[in-house]
Length: 408
Image (cartoon, rainbow, N blue to C red; front, side):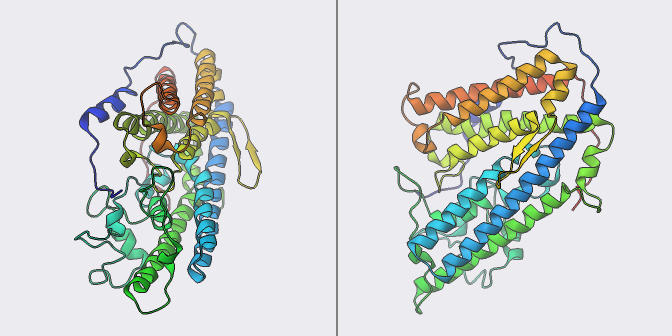
């Protein structure tokens, strides 16, 4: 498959957007007729602290995952083999597990939104990174005339410079460099370890050296950006975004938390990541297409929403964080709606887990096929979840707070 820069068809965007617009109504109206109680400030503050603790822990796990990926990449570059390549690929997959659970902290000008374009943008035009044989325009890996020396500054500068898919940094660039193009309908990309062998004075060896250098630098840059976001949620002595997030009144933090939950659930996950590939049946619109990891990404995103709803997170070392959740704060003021939202989020996680791998096979076939039925169930559940979250925002009369500059 040769990935080209694409624009999502207008009709598909309309379909995905219609799924989460505020006027959409869920089948049930769980808060209809129930009397709104005042928010419990103490409970809300505790829920926001749980939220901030989860954010720090999940970003810390993400940093550690990318650090482990860096170690695996160094082993691959030192001694390329099928085994070292496979270990680097497994390290990438492991690094994704905590990161996708952090995406619920996006969409409200928080610390991640300042650098997300450098971290997890997709889809990418892989030819911008490394052109396929026969393409006229060279990719960054091959273009030694325009880019004689690869550096973190250069890759960061080039990211998104030539368009929304001209992506040069982040998880999905690393994914492409480790797996290569996915031309295999039965599995992920099939990059050979030979692509990292630098012995000899051949052109292939020179490209392998550039490819390996790119891989190393991109991993280091990803770690730097994740450290920046982690420190913004730190409870240390230095001023951080966390202090702003937890500052009174608690309604401000609750607004931000619910806004992130609603936007990830609706326009991002139900819309862009699921409805678009469901409607187009195109691998081009798959999130982690090179590694065939999209099904796990969807589960992680849904689980991230449930984490902050319930106030719990299980770290990669097995340590558990637990406290009052955002849904508990909502349920104190609106018991029926709070309970309905909690149930709906749980249903969405279950639906996401039912999507079979690989995702690019699940989206094809007729609508009665098991894969497409599971994806459709997940879309419907996430739409309901988004509308309920928006209803909580509206029913509690929460207003968007004044924006502040993100601490770095």
